[in-house]
Image (tube, rainbow, N blue to C red; front, side, top):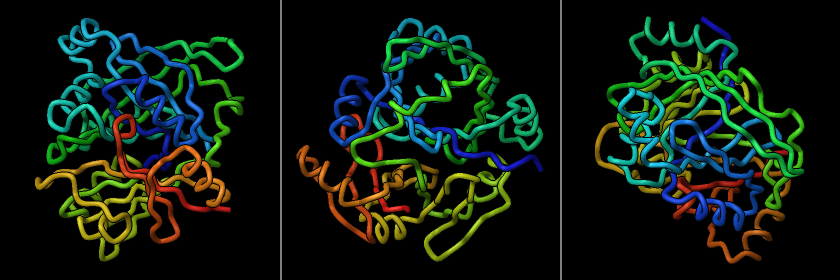
Length: 294
């Protein structure tokens, strides 16, 4: 088996990038400048010190987006399917880092979990100091037919994002990285093997509420509806048996700093299990949980 893949980023479809920027800013995140993909989508990313990031994803140019769909673009096809079934806000994909997307694609095909053709593209990225660079990526997609509302892909950074992103990685809410990505399914164990195949992780934990796949830098937790309620006071989003993305747990150095910032900005939140919870809202497609990690 290949080396275990680390978490790279999380894709969060949004109806409006401007609204997402405003919402994330009020939550205390530093949001990078808007950037456009050559296939019609756009993002406004939130980068963290642990080198993971959030990708709020909007549709910038409908004509280009529609053309990419006709050409069989795996990324926009999955995005369209998610928006059709789940709406324009949510969590559609977990992205894992890789040094060889071609090898991953071949492996996904051999394991019968390929999510479509590979995709290679580049996009400009504007830094806070006004400089601009070009980032290039190769993507290999994986999907489980039992889970039409969620997919995974690996991302090889052919021309990496700038290594020094300190200005973008510093957040007023104190977040330093991502601890957990939380998915849900009525039968979490049904997707354990799929997650292991994609992530190349042999570290899997099972408990009464679900399963956790341990990546090198984060956990992907698949919880039952009872688990969602116990840990996050959250109801399962749908009655079907598929896999859905529902929450992200962030690492902070001092939870008091996070709470003070949320309170100062009038953000509604609750506390549970030594975490601060902020429910999903327009521009924030998943529940955000903050926990202290020192």
